[in-house]
Image 1 (cartoon, rainbow, N blue to C red):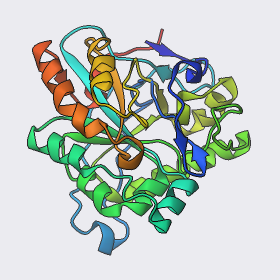
Image 2: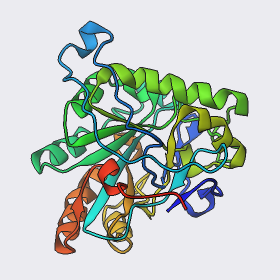
Image 3: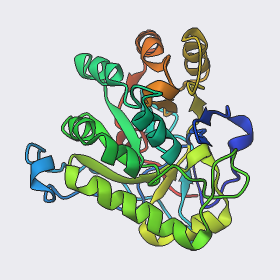
Image 4: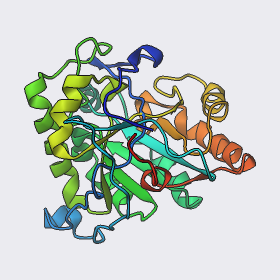
Length: 293
């Protein structure tokens, strides 16, 4: 289902507090508006020399209504595919915590290890500041043909007022923030898309109007794991498996210090999906066939 506008979902999500700012990332799911964005393998040679040429994924475009970026919750409810998506948040407060040694990492490599070992497809919504802090990890993600890369803003600022405690950007800066993030991701190549996810899932008509010229499709999600700042893994498994259906888009995080239980929950989530006959696939494949209505 694609909608030209959707109310913020923030009220139904779990608020999470990041040192220096709050962060709540959940998501809805759309297919890229227009063709998949193919990042160039050109760029800083030292940082991307080992990056394979970007892969073109065949994805149908989303139908636009008026001037607003389309919003998608999930893919068609047929077949057996679901999309596992992982947000990679990074705020100035998080960077400060890293530099001060208050936290060890906001990049959960155990998640990548598991996905790679089991050959599981996934889509990563990256903030520009996370990419700049973890270029090697970004290169690893981009180098996996089962992984797709998407946009989660540059510094995880809110795009609307009253989005938890996140600082907000003025509406005339929104498109520039998203465009800058695409440029940060572009040199890494891989399977890059024009999918975009708002921090906190907070968006309104004005924000969708502002992003329309960029050709993005806004991806919210229909299954929220609740992993930010969780203290136990079992509730995350229940939150996913109790709600997942064919076409679902599952929202999780790869930000280790802020989502410490995700890697413990993930093996059980994958096992539960197998028991239900559901198969993780790249977001573009799960959303294939979605049309505007």
